[in-house]
Length: 463
Image (cartoon, rainbow, N blue to C red; front, side):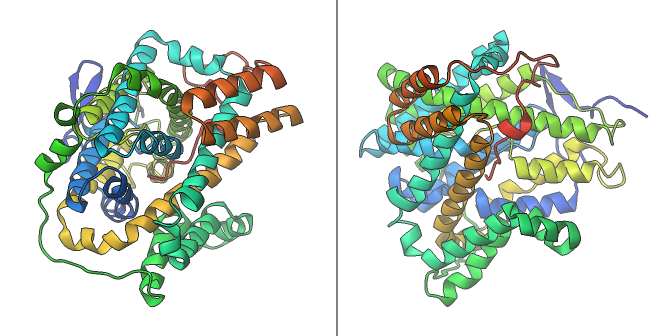
């Protein structure tokens, strides 16, 4: 029997659902939220301390703000997706922000410019409906080139740009972590094992965690990891973080910097749209098994919620692109349990909020957990980028349908990975026009968001 969507407090197009009051607690999702988020949600801390002038404690405070904003997608705005980073854009963003100059404040202004540009873009494209038309209008070759550019930038960051800081300092532990995750996530022989053995499927469903645990055990044995666990409660220094990060303290980005960041915001929007398409397809497929739990898919609401979250991040703790629509792996895992029926999960919103609203915020106050993870965060970052590179590469390579398009995709990807965003995007447009032509996809015939094949557009979200 069908029923209305899980109730909450409506405000405008959004729905506020208070944990425990509107939603139930599910322990499997809670425990995953605590431990898997520990393996991934803090992995930007080395970047913030190394390139943006923050202390470890200030970086923890920034991560806490990011997690609160991510959780707000579910609790405050009523979104039906498991939110996460726009991970494929991360390597391009790091190259842009770090390349702005040596001054951490200027780099953070670049992050703020990206966040505010992206928020403005989401607001305009969402309210007017132009986002749908924009994505359809873009040629497939250019889309594939953008995705391959993210793959090349991710691998370049790990193996060239920051190799001495991360990979070469912990080579064995990092290599083992990457190997375990790549094999369990992508290996064709392992896929047959997953179908045959339930325990293999359970390990594969944990995403980054198995590889991270292997690194945590092997690292000390080979002398690459030295734990210094401290006991107690950490009160994240939000005031100190604000003084170093917020544009209200360090100054807002100039108009020139905002214009310089806009191409990268456009590129990120293309990636975001693919995530929205994938999330919708997963929900619609699951809805066949759960007609009793109606889920409202509203593209305008999603655009507005993302715009508000990115704008808030941009003026509080700008680290782009941590405010995306979906973490694909987690979204699929929660929906799979939801599909099993009301006995397993009464409402999809309850399962999502159990994972995020009740799990992630706990991390940032537990000093033993934070200090225990600290020597592993460089491994977590390398692992996230390597998996992002692999996933983006195979998605990008699956899009071209002829040899000219395949060659053009490689050139566009290299241009975006090695040049400034404006130059890379113009190079990509010129390459597409001259070598392939404007090969746009067919116009959509279904609802607003079914415009991109999810197998091609759905980029795997690792954090």
